[in-house]
Amino acid sequence: MPVVYRKNTERGWLLLWKIEETEQELTRFVSSGDTTEVMGFGSPERRRQRLAWRAALRSELPRVCVAYEEDGAPVLCPGGRVTEGGSGFIGVSHTKGMAVVIYDPESPCAVDVERLDRRFGRISSRYVSDRERMLASADDRLFEAVCWCAKETLYKYARREGASLLEDIRLLQYERLGDRGRLLGEVPEGGEVPLAFLTFENTVIVYTDSVFFAEKSIKDLIF
Image 1 (cartoon, rainbow, N blue to C red):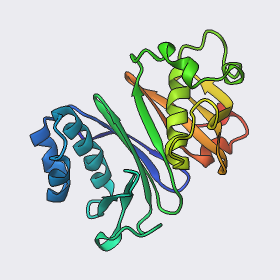
Image 2 (cartoon, rainbow, N blue to C red):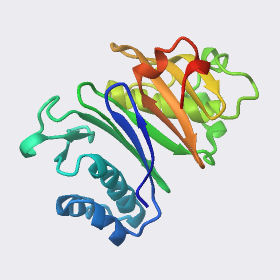
Image 3 (cartoon, rainbow, N blue to C red):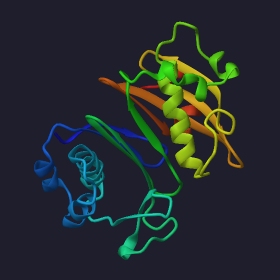
Image 4 (spheres, one colour):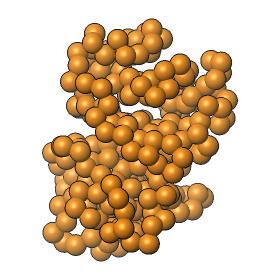
């Protein structure tokens, strides 16, 4: 199906695409270059996920060129050339059943999506510090999933290969109102990074969004 959720961020937007199409059906929403690019992946599911985020992107920017940096991060490249800042910045993430794209015309951005049925508790000691656990109530069953996505988002934003999710990337604040909320993270040599999160069906999405964090109170926010 087409985009199922759209939200304006500080200068750009966030799009969610619920993946229900076959691989062949998804090719109708993307360019021939997109289709060729994903053929290198052996897994049909991975190909569907990559086609889906490109379909979401092209629903807003149909003619944009997509390329990859050396670290694998997707970038927009005017004229087929990777140019810093060129046509803006994107962040992408995908999991079974969902693809997400964030766009900012001026500044780097990042996003991460995970399924809520993943067993985060089994690995939470690898990415949640004792101090960070104190940010949420003991009965907050969403926190470990949000924390994982937040740190993955911060990792992508910082682009510091090898940075530890437990020691180098930190959460400083966490506020939740129902199925949405906001966080403040910190990355090595990059300072504080405001984030927002939401849940959609069986997934949680965390993304960079400074305007979200600028409000005086989370209760004042209009979703």
